[in-house]
Image (cartoon, rainbow, N blue to C red; front, side):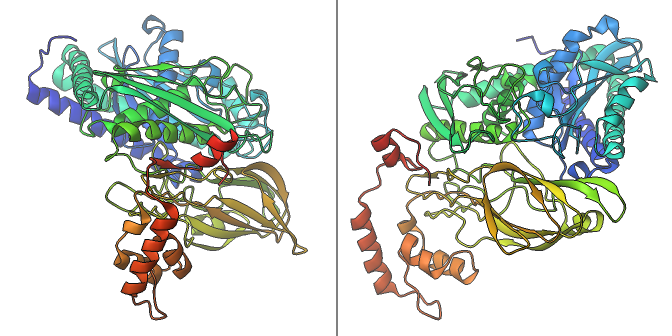
Length: 605
């Protein structure tokens, strides 16, 4: 570590100014974007880097993207050394095998020059509504190679000395189903980066380029020191866990295993993904930039939230990526649905740390970004559209060691907002009949998992293509220390003749005018023995419609009268019977382990 030469007050002022600049960048991007996926769902992130490509500050945005953008910026720095850059240059890429993550995520970087010297990089990453490929939204779960997923942009200059690369702009326009939204969102990213550049120039003007650069180094060293202090509080040891993705989008019924071993030694963490399945035939593969983002998130989650978000946080962490595995595939493996795998990686890592930090780690959450992408031609205006249907993208949060989980909230590496139903119905040929909490969808426990949702949507006109990009249809979120799993998710398509089809978690299907989709998205799992939950809390859940009377007695042993009065004697007796039937709790996780040990096969809940 370098010797600190900036006084602590100045260092803290610079740190906070960097954070403010990053947040201002993020707000600019969200407010100037064209597509609902960015301006409503907030699927975009901004960050600042030093001239060597090391993170200086991050906006309060999506943890996954903030982790992924690190790899993209590092690659651009490698391809375009500082002596090849001039003011007015803007860099771009989206190739997952050359710094990117999946094709809809485009990274744009602006080098920042002060008094003719490169001092920093202003960067943004946004998920674009459509960049081509075989399905609307550019995330086909049944793709078997990346070439079916959309336009691949290698590391290039989007602008050279202020002059736009018109050829590249035209290529992007012609490869998108929604070109106005794509190019509008690209412009929003450029505006975002320019806001960051202006903020950095003001900072350099106030303190000088030399002091600014030195302060960046010191802030990284400071973050490393604090991170190592936090890791030192985790008991040394080797912790292993595994979980499953339902299937890869191609081989239905064949689960994909994600396994990790976390070694904590003093102030260092090693994450080894050996034991994970080979790379998948379908699109759930996660390139190292995506896998690393999940690891970075979990490290930040178990350390102090007040530590500056910069490169120093991740110096104590090393990762082992098995080659040609689902967490480190080889080109041209498809990767467009890798978010599901990232979410499962987070679940697995939290399962590892739940063994080391039992009073800090919550039960498994919904475990998916529950996307239902609908695309087609709207006959009303003869325009192509791509929409997420105005539905929530997530279910419930897992129960916490001393609190219930939160209902219908995006958790961990994804931090999206729900697209408003009104905006969707105004712009697209879709009607949302209802969105409501799904009763009994939170796993039972002393602390109950947050609830998921159920919704019904209808296609009003024209025919469309539906891309189902979900998970946890087969494997439920796992409970902790006696807490029960949450139920699995599902999608039911009702055809015009009244017949119904239960759709798997990853599929591309046609939808006709008048057909409806019923979507059920799981809640989070429970934490602790359900028979220890306060009877009054169970009664309140039943009164609120979160838990049925049947589940109150079956899962919690609470007997209620018709007017929802607690029958104390009957409850005490029922709980004693349930304890006798179940026996003592001597397990950490509830995810069907007994079945798995007996049969050697993963347990489907």
